[in-house]
Image (spheres, protein in one colour):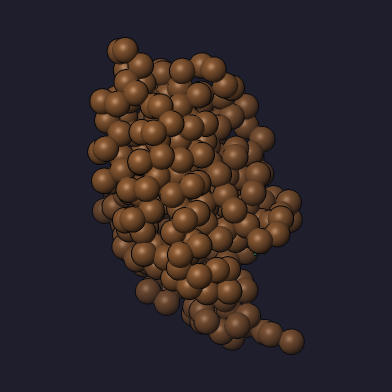
Length: 292
Ligand SMILES: Cc1cc2nc3c(=O)[nH]c(=O)nc-3n(C[C@H](O)[C@H](O)[C@H](O)COP(=O)(O)OP(=O)(O)OC[C@H]3O[C@@H](n4cnc5c(N)ncnc54)[C@H](O)[C@@H]3O)c2cc1C
C-alpha cells in the first residue's frame, strides 16, 4: 500500500488565514483543494509537504458569476460546477466541452479549477481553454493581490508564477459580443488525459472578419498552451475553411510534442493541426450564430 510521509494538517477558515498558515509553515507547506493531483503524488512520495493547508471550506473561493462583462470563476469551483453552470455554457461553450471530457464524475465532483491550473500538468485541459479565452488569474499573497494573464501564468511543466506563500483566488474571463468558442479533444478512452486537444475562441468584427482569435493547445508541447503565430495569421480574415486549415497548420508547426505511450510525435502534431481546425470551425459557427 502506498502511504504518504507524515505531515501537519491545518484547515483554513479564510483566505487571510490560509495566507497566515502558509507563512507560518514556510515553503514546504502545500495547499490542498480537491486533492486529486496532490494526494496521489504524496502517496508515491513525489511530493512530501511538511504541512497540508486545506482550503476546501472557503466559500470566498467558490464563487461563479457574471459580473458586468466578466465571467468570474473562484479557484475552488469544482469541475462539476463549471460543467453545470448555464451562464458558462451560454457565454463559453469551450469550458463545457472541456469539462465534459476531463476525467470522470468522481474526479470532477471534487477536483477544482484552481488545483488544475496550479498543478500545471503539460497535458491539462483547462489550461488550454483558459489560454484560448485569454483569462486573467488573480493571486493573493502577503502583500495583497496581483493579476496575471493566464498566458504568463505557466512557467513550465508543473510550474506556475504562484509563489509558495500565495494562493490563486479567481479567474476572470472577458465576455464579448460576437464571440464563439469550442474545445475538441482526442483521448485513448473515455475519461483519459488527452493525446492532444485544442480550444478556440473567435470574435467576429464588421464584415464578418476575425477581430480577435485565441487558441489553446494541450499535450503537444505548445509554449504557454497557445499558438500566437496562428492567432496573428487569423486576424482580419474571413473564417473560411482554407483560412482555418492554414491556422491549424501554423499552430501544429509551432508545437513540440513528445513521443510517449499516447503516441509518436508525427501523430500528435497531426492532431494539433486537425483539432485546431475543428475547434476553430465550431467557434466560427458559434460566433456568426449558425451553431449554438
Ligand atoms: C483519474 C484522473 C483522471 C484525470 N483526467 C484528467 C483529464 O483528462 N484532463 C485534465 O485536465 N485533468 C485530469 N485530471 C486532473 C484533475 O483535473 C486534477 O487532478 C484536479 O482537478 C486538480 O485539482 P485539485 O483541486 O484536485 O488539486 P489538488 O490536488 O488539491 O492540488 C494540485 C496542486 O495545486 C495546488 N493548489 C490547489 N489549489 C490552489 C490554489 N487555489 N492556489 C494555489 N495553489 C493551489 C496544490 O497545492 C497542489 O500543488 C485527472 C485526475 C485524475 C485523478
